[in-house]
Length: 319
Image (cartoon, rainbow, N blue to C red; front, side, top):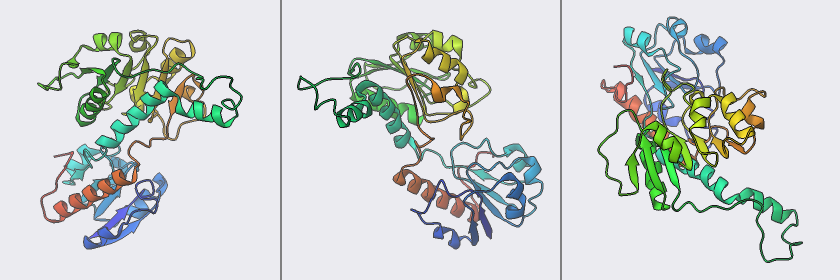
């Protein structure tokens, strides 16, 4: 088997090891692959491993040796899965590897808004505490999470983990999904309609997939249903949010703040309105990037490759 990893750098910038691939065949790892070089690099590959390199029909038609596509991600919108199915090429993804990591970043955003640790650290180091006539001071309103309401939109594994953490903080949780399940998480958890969730939540966190129905779901009408004192957190998919509408809500005080780990275009264009919006915290798509998280990802990748080579592929997204 000839294996080509088209864009391995973000998964493994050097702190992990690709050598497990040798048990499945000869392998080559490229840090990044521009579209113009995709066919040249993958033409003779039996297995292509990709994270964000697009393998659409135009590319796949020019890869005659391809037998298997292994993703380094949960999402699979970069692959023309229908055409791959026509060719008999299974596509496997990496499910449920980042649940704890994403939930952790959700609360990093929430706690940043509640405690402003970075703001106060900078103030202390600028000499403001040393010059203060009192034993303490605060630059922003400080907020307890206990008793606040968290609205969770999308309730898969990540949404549930977020709820569990929120309940441990003493929060009340409302969840919205088109298909509610019979889940017992205690008296402070409940299902709600989307409108009721938005009206009640102090924090709204997005955990829904990107579909035609959810694209730009967070628009002006959506934001107008939220409390002016509420915060929006997006660690799901960037295009779920209408970024111009969110920026306007932040800049006009219609929303207290927002945290985003994902944007509609990544890396973002400099004119993205969220880059200059008021009280908007943005991280560069890092929820999945912890060492342990990426280590788990590669372990699942290895298991996927083994299953394919054994003739019984798993985690196939185009059965």
